[in-house]
Amino acid sequence: MSVGRGDVDRDAARPEIDVAREAARADDFERVSGPAPMQGLLAVNLVGLRTIMRREIRRVTRIWVQTIVPPAITMTLYFVIFGSLIGRRIGEMDGLPYITYIAPGLIMMAVITNSFSNVVSSFFSAKLQLYLEELLVSPLSTATIVVGYMIGGIFRGLAVGLLVTVVALLFTRISVEHPFITLSVVVLVAAIFSLAGLLNAIFAKTFDDISIVPTFVLTPLTYLGGVFFSISLLAPAWQAAAMVNPILYMVNAFRYGMLGVSDIPIGVAYALILSLLVILFVANMWLLAKGRGIRS
Amino acid sequence: MDALRLEHLRKTYPNGVQALRGIDLVVEEGDFFALLGPNGAGKTTTIGIITSLVNKTAGRVVVFGHDMDRHREAAKACIGVVPQEVNLAMFEKLIDIVINQAGYYGVRPRLARQRAEKYLKALHLWDRRHDIARNLSGGMKRRLMIARALMHEPRLLILDEPTAGVDIEIRRSMWAFMRAINDAGVTIILTTHYLEEAESLCRHVAIIDRGTIVENDRMSRVLRKLQYETFVLSLEQTVEAAPVLDGYTVRLRNEHEIEVEVSREQNVNRLFALLSDQGIGVHSMRNKANRLEELFMRLTERSGSPEDRP
Image (cartoon, rainbow over all chains, first blue to last red; front, side):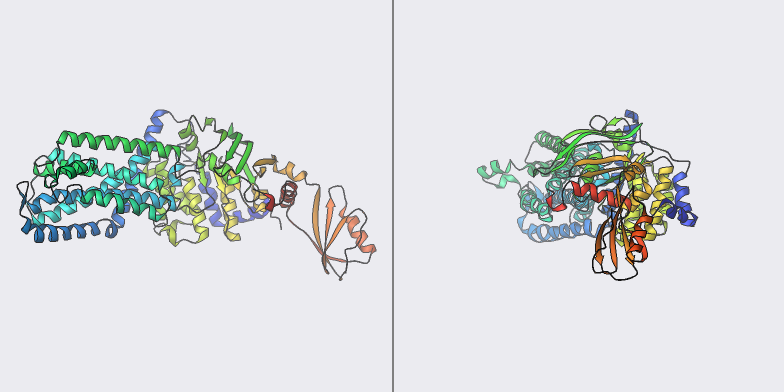
């Protein structure tokens, strides 16, 4: 049976349809579309960036039992077992009580794993459930999308890092020798691993793909990255091998900021951290702009 | 001004399938345009390219004068899209979904909240605004996607089967809403499998089949091109074979029903007279399909059965 225009017009008498018509006729039909000068695009991207940030931060706080609590519990166990129980038998490392020595490493470990897993799971979920299309069809620049997700990852990394610091203070006294270095390194490292998580999510096609990197790459590199020991304990050949692990530089830079001791010159650590940040940012930009893994 | 201009649009997927084989299409500003075609014809690929979810192989997309390659952001800002597949963040609240979407288009939070109320109310979702999307029915999810697409008040709204799986009452209210949006000046491109929907709402129609446009004209002119209509006649008595009626093609459906093809030049009164001469009375008569459906079938059958498609 065909339905003519008249069939629909009869519906116009229904009150809810009147609301629909009224809505569509509203005078405040303000458009942001049409010719967009640079100033307009900048404003659109700033509002867009704030929106992505707010959404990502809300996601972290909404599911805080999954995002914030587990790493805090894990790190508490590390402090109890490695710091308090075993640490007493180890004595000092680099002239510091063992529990104090590992505190910056454990904080950094929490920051690394959480900033990474936040972005990889958030972006991959958006890709899998297709609501990433909300962003892809919008006029937002690729840089805005990358920075938005990166800030979400930084937020969770720092939130968990702060909580682990509070836990650490229950077990040992920590002074911050170089506040600027401490703060800048932790933010930069959180940014790096947020971008690494994004890279992983771009390539990922299954849930297995987002667990392979944390399990087989991130965890071994973190454990061997000087969290629990000074590389001066290693044989010269192993010391040389350890130097290719970027996490070693990050952990030592952070430890230098907090405790004033490091196996690595701080300048070299900064250079590596900044280089990695730029490389990962450019790689993500390029892949997203090309549509790798997200556009057919 | 043209709302949308597609020039020589081609898409070949990595597996070698040619989804689009050079499409040229113009949609004028303010139009209500139907893009029809069988499954796999290239409709969703075309929409994917327009909305930049699919990379084109060749060709040009221009939206309100903005070339998609050179002024991508400006072009995208003009478009709102309701995709065929549900693509909602299932664990987010309705209100957050629509306000976030506005933010992605640069709409500030205060205005976004006003619009959220306006469109969620218009689509009967305001009372559910604090629910998460996962808890909505299928029809509600479709309406939420329409509200979301309208949050930046686009000049071109693309609706890819927006009423699929929606019951008839809600579908009709959605038709009224779409028509009101179009009346307010928004250009609409609609794809649908409900051809009565396209016939009822749209002023222009393009039919795409196997990656090419096989028909593109005003709806009224397209329907006039239909040379034949098929009627189903319910008979007052049983017949064992299709009666022979001079000048008409008749097929037996069952012992109570026959199908008769009637050309535009032929007279239905003469058909009844011929039946009456053979002592056959007609209890009732109806169209086998609506007119657009009939034309659609003829056009797409002409270019091969669905099984022949790549």
